[in-house]
Length: 167
Image 1 (tube, rainbow, N blue to C red):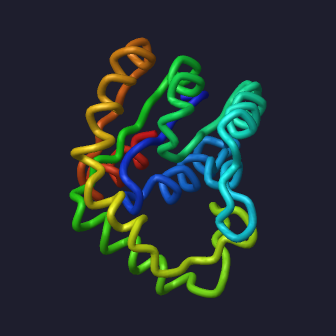
Image 2 (cartoon, rainbow, N blue to C red):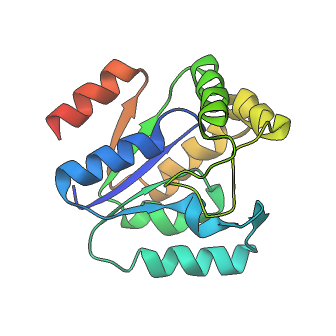
Image 3 (cartoon, helix red, strand yellow):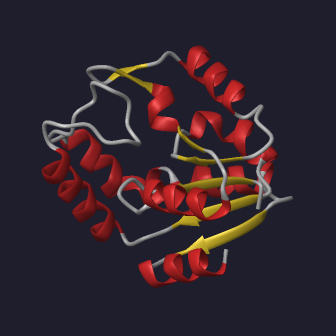
């Protein structure tokens, strides 16, 4: 594993796995949230974000975490391994809420500066509807852009722990 893409629903554990896998394998981690968000939860425009992602992916090795379907066509073809964290939506939602409580008023290492956690009903709705709205596009992107890669589909914490232990 030299170029690893970690995808899946928010709150599923993508950033945590990216940090741990990066430390274990000695690979740099690219948190897409850091590239996308500007202080105060201001979104980058699509062209600017795609350029930032493309530049980051020029490195010979990396781990990226994040959804951002607008960049699957950039990331998937370059990845040798695609890890799909597919946790149950109640787990994802609960963890997103816990994360908000834990980091409220402060920043996270995997998030852009000035983007403090807060109650965000739109974000929770995204998590709740992920399987209906995002999953079909993700599956199509995997078929189109990720067929060459090793795809690892992890559905529970135990599978994530086993994957990390075996990496």
